[in-house]
Length: 241
Image 1 (cartoon, helix red, strand yellow):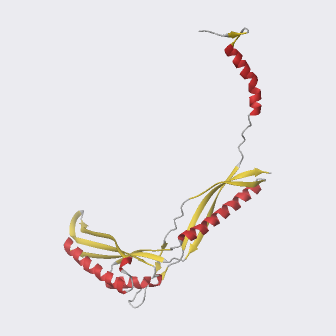
Image 2 (cartoon, helix red, strand yellow; image 1 turned 90 degrees about the horizontal axis):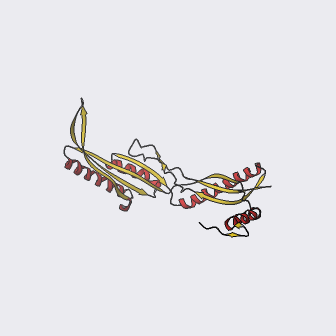
Image 3 (cartoon, one colour; image 1 turned 135 degrees about the horizontal axis):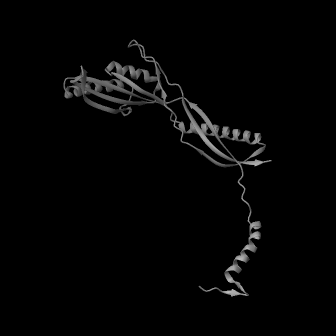
């Protein structure tokens, strides 16, 4: 191994000595990074609108000794229901099949099972904007042979506008809370550093109905309102006074 000397001092040692002499100056030249305090706060906004769309399901359920007989009876009964709904004012495009099943009915007696014919079920999905006619559609379906009605939900076509109103309210609330926190901490609110939100998903409005006791009394429907709730997360710079 070779060592190089200059004026009696090894070159490597001379470099270390020079670096150690420069270090105090370098330390003074490098600024010290001090992390500024921040304020993290969330806000919630809500906005409501009257619904203008409704969906519901109408089912026809039949039973027979054979699968073919159950299916055939179900088809005739569902066709009658479809025709009744169209006579009540629903276009064919508003009706779509949501589910269809044919299966054996199994009965259990004294820990033993036996087959008791077949069940056929055809579920029709109805979508309409005629909310005032919703009760009449239900009554027409039941009178025509429908055996089950459910899944009634209300929504609004202008949800984007409602969501933006809720977002604005959420941001105003978040900024107000952040300002209050900054004031209470003896400082002032700085610039907005981060703003985010989760996609709003308004819950469908369940229907409220009192089924008619007599065929001549239309089933009353109360749509209520569609409410959108949004949550925003914010991060602000805190500025000491």
